[in-house]
Length: 326
Image (cartoon, rainbow, N blue to C red; front, top):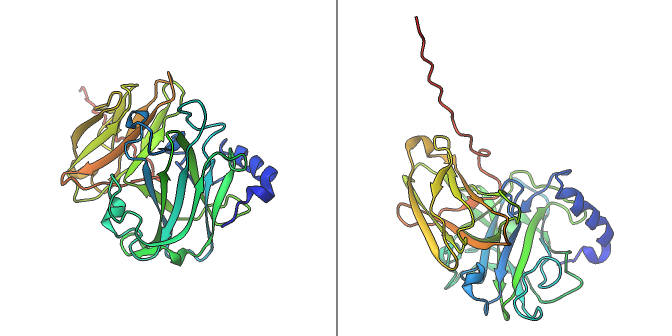
């Protein structure tokens, strides 16, 4: 494990500022397409009404089978305190642990794909772990796991990829940790890994605090899905939640209030199967808002959503009726 900012602080500060203005390619999580401000994990003593219902967040990274290089998994602002994080009380006094897993069971174990982590959710072989509290070293900076051999992940035949799992777990305290991940083929440059994708089954996140900003979730619906049920928590009735598919345009979805869940069920037609859909969460920009979102199918099974939408961002197919007069 290395912390590249201890050596390359000025260099990466420049690269980071360039990257988030869209000047270079990269693979952040959340992605540019998702347009989400930060992932958020509150420590275990925080009330769920802050927007984190279980204080644990799990993401999976799928590295293509044919990729032969190294993998570096970086965490931006992993500490608690300073520029971005949510203070509860008179001072920051919380801790977050980030752990990386590969090997057998890292992804295939069903406990790891549960939206309420319990049982053997930390299955697999631990490849690295670090606990962060208040730190001037890591505030507004990076920590990196790597270099990692892709074959240290668990191979999944359906994905044709080696899968890694990264767990963010809120420990002692009640503050909120705002952070982002970044996946690269290098520890010195933000080099994308072609074909790599990141996915999760539940996300705790912060909306951008800008009026009418739209956050996006991109589930891929296979041929077996005929209905979806969206679940959102602690949205504070802030704006709108909408669904767009190739044949639906901005359909309204139920939204939650402060400290409660809201759900709505939506039929999926054959034209929408084997496509990516776009679930849009709109911010009013009135205040920083942290919330939780996940999706299930008609059987109650959790549906993953992807940082990079499979097949691209879905486009609504407009139909134009032309009437000819003779």
